[in-house]
Length: 370
Ligand SMILES: Nc1nc2c(ncn2[C@@H]2O[C@H](COP(=O)(O)OP(=O)(O)OP(=O)(O)O)[C@@H](O)[C@H]2O)c(=O)[nH]1
Ligand SMILES: [Mg+2]
Picture (cartoon, rainbow, N blue to C red):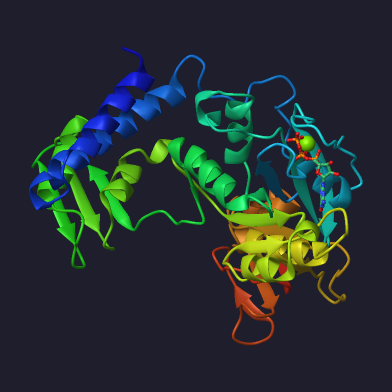
């Protein structure tokens, strides 16, 4: 029996099982089995993905944003509007067949924008160019889910489902669970809050399914069984921020548009009519949480023309990350630094390598005398 059929079988069994306290443990076990099979699918011979012709675009700039959506929603039109790169757009589906990179220059940062082929239902299993598209999506710092304002809902649910099934979690953070494998003493399970989904017994059964017999588990939030499995499968899980971009608002009514625009993590635009694109850029910037740091030489004015750009999802916001961007030897020669800006209590505060910088801070680094 193929892996797909085995997953289907277990899903059927789950649907047949009544959901109550007595079956919770069993359902948890079935969920773990599905997660394991899906992980196998990802690692399978055809798995991994990303190696398709034309999909291995190198990382460029300070952050990477991927355009994911069904065919003909206007992904290529958006890339051509926001960047100098032109990606072919047309009224027929599957116009774009590979990954087309463009660059947005915004607030002195370079943001790589990737146009991708449209994905369809079954993408996670390799339909169309699904696997490659998802692999590129996984490498992104932000996913822009481009939707057609006329039938966005259905597409949004389908794409979210496809991404979920390969372990991509949109706009979620990693559950606050500590999991440490041990050599002895069995499964030690603790929680700092009241639990309504998990229990020692469920955790034990799921761990056994993964052939883990000794571990220390600490839940610091009321996590669900799925979240617990995500921790065990953390190798295959990516937590990526996402903006839902509804395009073609020129063809819907103002009331419909108003309703869409009020939803969280949502931006409504029209590429053809150039509506709301500035706001989209602003929201992309906020979601990426990039931090600009201006450097200053002793006795000189800060250099406001070319900031260092720090990214939380890459190297973090520390002074050390800033040093590494200037030169890889800089950390070795580092003596101390002074910071002006929001991250400090007073001006010209002396800080070390671990200090976290804020947007638009000014940084002066002093090197050791040799
Ligand atoms: N009405 C309207 N049509 C748009 C808008 N943006 C794009 N289109 C049209 O939508 C069609 C598809 O646009 P593309 O940019 O090729 O779509 P795509 O998502 O890249 O499609 P694939 O590459 O096939 O996945 C084109 O005919 C565009 O002219 C818009 O804001 N309003
Ligand atoms: Mg396209």
